[in-house]
Image (tube, rainbow, N blue to C red; front, side):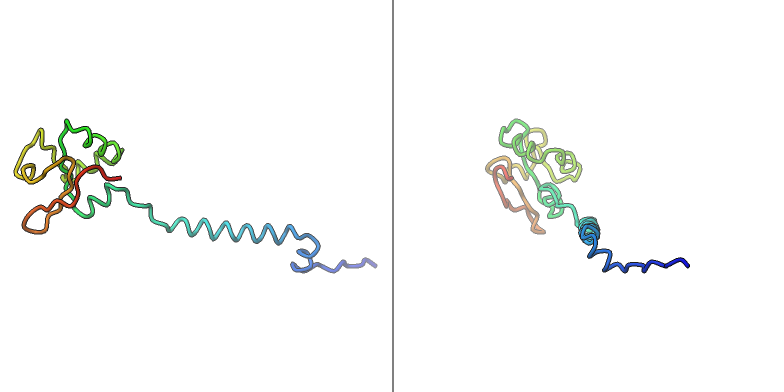
Length: 123
């Protein structure tokens, strides 16, 4: 006659080996963390915020402060230029260039005219 061993329940197995519970808990925690991080939106860059708010960047290609600002924009500078919201007053002077005191300047259109909302380098 062969004696059958009683099969242990999950609770009994965890009492015998606490590492099972720890591993299970860690696995659930990592799963929740990974799923949560997938849904998070990438933080917008300075340029993305300026473009979405239709802020015009007025600068002069010979201005050192303007070059500092462009360096802060980094890889997004080309995206800003492609948006049509940049104006180099040295190479393309126009009426807007006459409205500003310093470069770089940031302007926004209020529907009828451009208003200066910022001057100098922004971080």
